[in-house]
Length: 57
Image (spheres, rainbow, N blue to C red):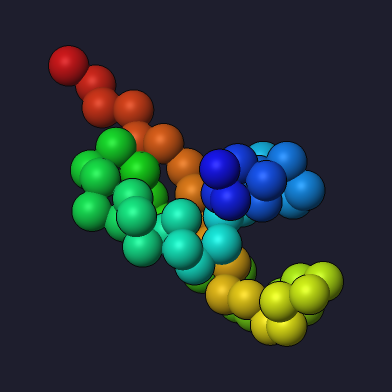
C-alpha cells in the first residue's frame, strides 16, 4: 500500500527505492536512477525511472 501512495503522489514511471528493491529482478522492467529527491516527512529518497520491456516475438 505504501508504494501505491508513492505512485499516486509522484509522476508515472517514477518509483522510490523500496519499490525498486521489490521489483528490480523482474525481467519485464528496466530502471534508471533519478537520484535523490526531497520527500515530505521522509528526507532524501532515492528515486528511479521505470519502463516496461516489450519483447518482440
